[in-house]
Image 1: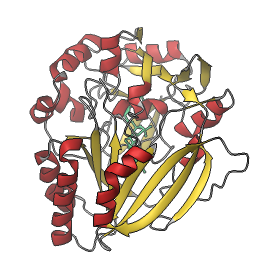
Image 2 (image 1 turned 45 degrees about the vertical axis):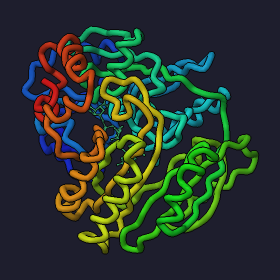
Image 3 (image 1 turned 135 degrees about the vertical axis):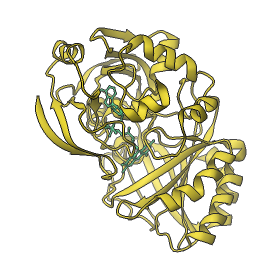
Length: 391
Ligand SMILES: Cc1cc2nc3c(=O)[nH]c(=O)nc-3n(C[C@H](O)[C@H](O)[C@H](O)COP(=O)(O)OP(=O)(O)OC[C@H]3O[C@@H](n4cnc5c(N)ncnc54)[C@H](O)[C@@H]3O)c2cc1C
């Protein structure tokens, strides 16, 4: 055990007096959880790219840097150690002829951290990373090792924010290796919105960013190609037109150097365009100089009890603000619009909803809380932020 000062990627969560443990294997991890006598919770760390206080000062933070690597892949299912960073998974799977079906904007997260919050990319027929989970193994709140593989167990575990236990291995559905061709265009807002349905039908992936300050859109498409022998990988600078191509795991992620905080809601597709238009009107009126973009992505639904995408296709609308600027005026102004259009917040990003409001958004919320109590009866994984919402 070591005393550490820890903060998340954006600096919005700080734990100046945390204890850190780095278990080397599953028995060592199980012993730490079983022997945890508080105070504070015992909580896994991913790469700290979530924007909300999943961790609290005084907690025992578990560094899972010893749980990395591809354990096996065959028949379209890969078994990975839970702490494996996403950027390591592409090359590991590619060496065996496989790839993740989908990825988000960056690849700095760990697999367990990304799955725990429903991290996603785009694609009308493609779900989040959590939707690709086939089974998980975890150490529960009593220190027991469990394998969750039945349909209900997996549905509960798809998006669980670490409340069911510390995941040690995750099995994911994977697809044969493929390449991607990325093209970015700059265009007017109305043209971008008119093209949306056609582009969603014509491309494996399509998303757009709208930048309030210039009131213009950057539209991005990704199309499948054979993995090219000679990729063109130079990143397209944000806000510029361009193209590049390479293996899927090389093209999905971008670099995000500037620190920001983020709020994101998944809005049913039926109301998504109306929602985006309302957000745009409000931002042009009250935040017309904002350089940070609004990101609009479409993805498939899944059966996760706490998946923001449970129930069908959604569009996610993301609002960003610089990490050194108070984000609340912007987020407080936009959040009611996202809620009024039937949205559910991304679990790893900031929002202002309390437990009863969240419970009303998820038909299986109470079942999840019951299952959580079964796997962690003493609440060892509950930090105050989570206890307020899920105890
Ligand atoms: C620059 C940036 C870009 C982003 N892009 C996207 C995007 O494109 N799409 C998207 O959906 N989100 C995106 N996010 C959000 C991000 O993917 C999620 O917040 C994700 O959870 C972060 O993963 P992590 O490894 O950093 O996990 P952390 O933030 O460290 O942890 C997240 C949760 O997982 C738990 N956890 C970690 N490891 C385990 C384990 N082994 N067992 C059980 N629980 C565990 C933690 O305790 C915590 O509750 C982005 C965030 C940033 C900062």
